[in-house]
Image (spheres, rainbow, N blue to C red):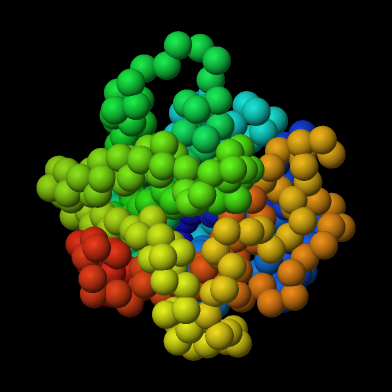
Length: 345
């Protein structure tokens, strides 16, 4: 499994960058078996959980780790970087990040030659059919680019069309490098995050301007799946509608107990859909409304919270997303087939 994207996918790459968004301090990783790792949640992220479902023998290593080479790349590599986006200029507010285009260059120039040497193949034909490429990006292009820009902005539909066009070219590049099975993650309902609500504390409910942007992107991303499946011979693209999965939890928080318990998390369901589980550093404290305060307070029952910090889901929500991505037969949740069928194809 090869992974590209932003903080929801990042498993430690930003740890080794300069001044940037990082999650390599407490309370992040409080429930992760290996402790602090750089994952932007309390425990496992969606990548870890999909890896478990795919029965990978170990966690996917981050590209930035100097030891990620040789035999360690055979089961996959994670290139994702928290704060990055589809556009190269997204993420500048977070400091030094690795854009999606640079992530793909890292795959092409460093990891792919290592992989070809290990499995004795040439990617210009295609990689062995068991490799899955997971791409989860786009959220930061709205929250930390479009909606923060002081410059004159294009209409939202035009900006979104540009994002999808850019993403399409990047996915076609991965196809040319040998990728055939792709999982594309939707943007979550970012307007329902604690970060969004901090901006308008008197508002009741979600910030619809952000949710509309996410929904527009997701509609176009699902259409892109159809386009690329038809255009790229031998390819299989899958769209995971994490927007709907998370939105359903927020609307009906007590109806999702079974999946959480199945994945080893005791739970009576979600009972807090609006607050961050950790103490988020305020703007006055030098925070950005997103990341946990270093050494700050953390909730006791983390499996009952939707959000761990100001933006990122808890492990319990990641379990919901990964489980439905892998097993759901509802095309409103994963389209046109689930990840289990994709892996077996």
